[in-house]
Length: 460
Image 1 (cartoon, rainbow, N blue to C red):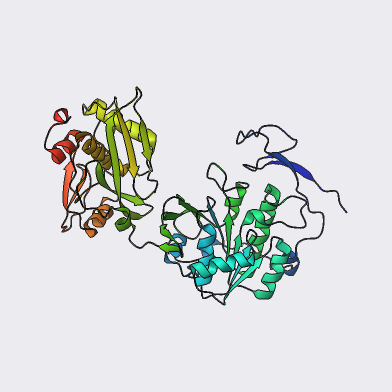
Image 2 (cartoon, rainbow, N blue to C red):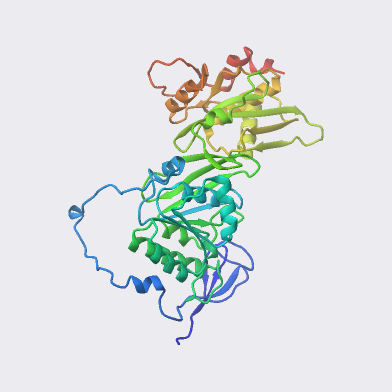
């Protein structure tokens, strides 16, 4: 038997070293360097043996290549199909990452249960009894869904050869290991080798494979970065476990766009796709309250109307508090500085709290104007009409800047029955008949005059 070759890997970022060091020079983490076996000590895996008669490829002129659309298999989940670009491509490898308890396993299990195709669900974290109880809770039992609790790749390939499924789901890639590598499950070497074997299985059997992956404390997918390069599609499942909404977004897609986005609502019977999330993100309370404004934003290519709440009060202690939920705190400080410097509002001695309802995170600069409107409304204790919304960016000079895809934002606001939308005076509004009134503002002072009918200096 040949001597095994070992090297040192960082368990956080996957960086490779010739010898052990205390701190990883790539990710700056301490005590994450582990020695691992990188050479095979026995024969190749079962799948490599079964697929030994591979046909050799030859180079072709690009003009000789017959281009055609990739065939896609519907998963039975409209939101998942939309993010994937119309369905899952045969022979592709998809990686789904997300925080623990966010609903990754639930999403893929209900996809397997609702699919009409033969599906093999591999679980390395739960027993068959646990999966059966969850399947009875989230969906009816489907005879075309097969459950296998296994972590050894050689056994998985034997069962796949016998069953020949139309879709293979692995939960999760960090639990798999191969007997032909002397490394612990979840290590960099095992993740890389198991993923390579699954890619070979997917390409040679034309079976789509979906991998569920863990994430690190900074939110990136655990394991070597090469894992994301090896797969065809990378999806991120986001949300707050304290709220019901979940967002599925594409980070990488070799067969479609990464601008698509899926929104789900977590319920007792599983994840429910949300067709019109704007209605759920807006408060059903139609009473006019101060400190509340509606913003027209975009998540991927999907327009959304969200409700922004602000509270401005006198600081009880010496240092005023600045707190934001769902909005970047640094951008909140910048907008407060713009109000202080450009518009004359004295907010330095006041506490400012900001919250985006629904528990979603928004980085779109188009909600700047709505944030300012909510802060001004709370500061003056004057409510904003409930039929108004805002879609514009605020610059450091106090100017109101245009945002892209203003037509989609206006259409979404019009669809939900709003009557007024505030945009930048430089925005290119589509010329079409609209029932919603478009009001243009050039500076923060114009916004205050239009909302409250007074100049900024006259506000309390």
